[in-house]
Image (cartoon, rainbow, N blue to C red):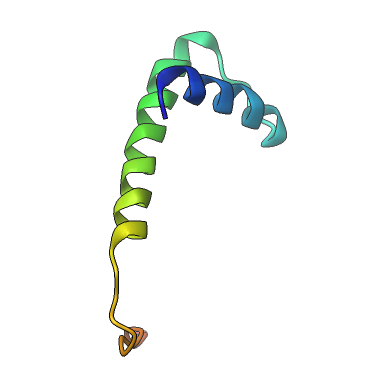
Length: 60
């Protein structure tokens, strides 16, 4: 997503989430979204073999 699309996303989603995003905060919010979207893209593009099993859950 480019900066214009991210700004539109911020403007559209912040009221739904009950957040007030000041104009001065938008560059930091946009940067955070870029990092989060990059991580999401990497996870989405990582293919697992069909025989993969989920890891066990260990509790203390």
